[in-house]
Image (cartoon, rainbow, N blue to C red; front, side, top):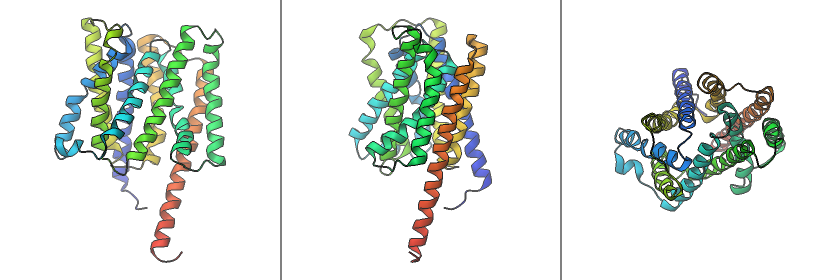
Length: 309
């Protein structure tokens, strides 16, 4: 594997940190507009991101080229799963503190390992099994206090919604991983936003509200920074490997604690912080293992290409 220049890697890390920051701000905007139903929030998040995405497409070879695809069906399936993940995540923000929602969402890469083994046939060996077990222990530590008050409570509902969002997000990422070799990143980003915009309209009969001026500003802001976050995230992978960038996604925990405390007067519990450490550790182990497997595979290909194997 050819080493990337240090300046490029630093740029990739900076873009990743910027994307994580704006995504956390986006979640805070959605949480602040808690009177607005999740489906309506998803509509604003998706439709307001489209102008930014379209400008990005124009600057990267044109709209027609950017949205060209080999399979609308694959994008539709990925879009449906991803949209459900987004909607459940927005709904979960109404019932749980922002840091807690962020911590539970960290289960996504852990679930993704399990799904990749089941769907894509990837190996599921001891290190991955141990990391998955460690992550689920962390999740239990985080959610146990919420479930102890009764499954019928709004806190338990928030846990269920957020866990469902994390699991569906993992499934969506598995689909993206399967599409990566035949679809461009620009097409994946565009068709997801288009699909989520259409699907969010299906929730209109279920009680949309007319936003106040303040809520309208929050929803527009969520869409704009969400679109910007998608572009920053996608751009970061042009300068650094996923294995290098993935650990920096956990900076969102820091931002959610700060924003939650300042904006929503939310103080993280000791159990949530301890559980988060378990989940983050599991995620880092998985990331490092995936990176090592990638390096080993590249080395084997080079050896084979030189006729030494």
